[in-house]
Length: 620
Image 1: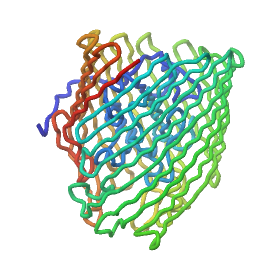
Image 2 (image 1 turned 135 degrees about the horizontal axis):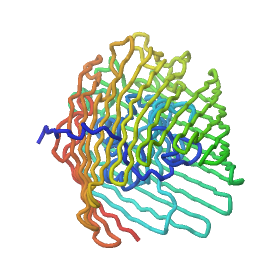
Image 3 (image 1 turned 180 degrees about the vertical axis):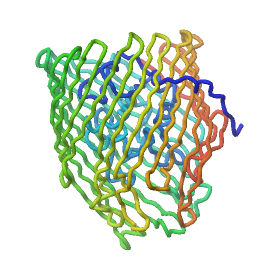
Image 4 (image 1 turned 90 degrees about the vertical axis):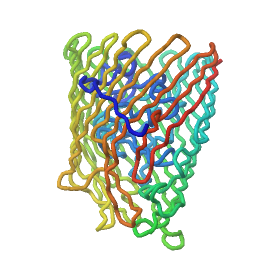
């Protein structure tokens, strides 16, 4: 079957994130862990079980089932992935892993993070906060924050996993966790070969993650470290892909990510908690590209990237979280990046740049229950970056509990993003006169949470200014006029009976590029989908996930000049089954693109055909 479409009856239902219990602590979007009821922002939390129900092998496919979050994967696992949160640019979403920022401002995408650099097996939960968050996180959090959290120390357990699949897919890994006296530990290693589901698109990686937790009396120390080593190939972006590329040579990239975090928390007394946190992130990458024939627009090119970020903060939480509490603190961030690039060859046209910047910040956050039902939150932050004027951002939100099941929420916030090192420093296209991108965002919504049924619907508006874009006539990066996005996001979760859960979601985003006829590429105006999770008994579970994606604009250079066209809408159906053979052994079968839908992720880049993967997990 090449084209099918479900009648989306669930679109008549206006609802939203039903993931995870509301009493689960959320560590994103605030300076101190809180429950969902203590946070006014629009938030989705996906735990390990829910994540694997949405996709057994790919975090990208799972995140596409989240309202207002669109992840575009160009041409298979070796291609570039981009995150569009509420229709924003990919580099407007701040991505954290165990509290460490992963955005790299030296890359050609303005600091956008590539989600192919995360293995789904390493993830324990994902938290997504929508809306401008610079009043909490400073630069980069214009559209929101995605926080990926790896396996935490828990009861003593050891797991081995292995998966094989179509197109030479293979993955193997192990994890172990436990506790020794006051020290909790969790270690995991995963190796994956994604095969070649799309011609030319390959990816291999090895990942190691670790977390340690030590507690004694009123002191807690947390440590995390991650190492990720990968390589990949793909037809160059906008080359026309496997179908239209004139030159059949491939992009090749080898890269290493490392990040670490160390935190010490002291409960001084019942009304004062003090936390010191440090983090480090490093990315090294070597890229070689054949360019795009006939080379008028993009000749052969490459680069060697070395980027480091260090961060240190001191946060004090004062007060009682049941009535009135404050978060007060300071932060220092240092970024240093070097890009040794070339066009044609290093002998013909070297394109090197190196930049460093530091940001000193101070912030205060206030939270108050005006009544038992009415929460008000506000944050103010001062960021003072080197070589730029200081930025002051604010945020205010409120949540009102109408009754035990229904609550209203509203938020307004400001955000900014400093120009990336690539946009500033590239010898051919860089522009030292660029100013920070800014946004003012707001949303309002209603949430229903019951024992068997939960839902949320929200309306949002984001008004962007000074967005950075490439000007072909000036042949350099420039600040554009404003862009406005608005829309509705919704989702519903229904526990029909003890062994059957249904979910449905829908998002509509309107993007208006003021005073311009250009289009923002790769963003569908409408997406919607549904999921069914059924347990036949204690041993057998089945999952079915459907996704409908609207038309998107795309551009390519394979003719020697820019060609823009509309990619067709598509419907996709994925299925999986789990069999718990005994206490220790579980098997998983996943069928991706079950109906073999024929669609494109970019001009000339077809999506992967129908595929199957069989996995086993052994637990001790």
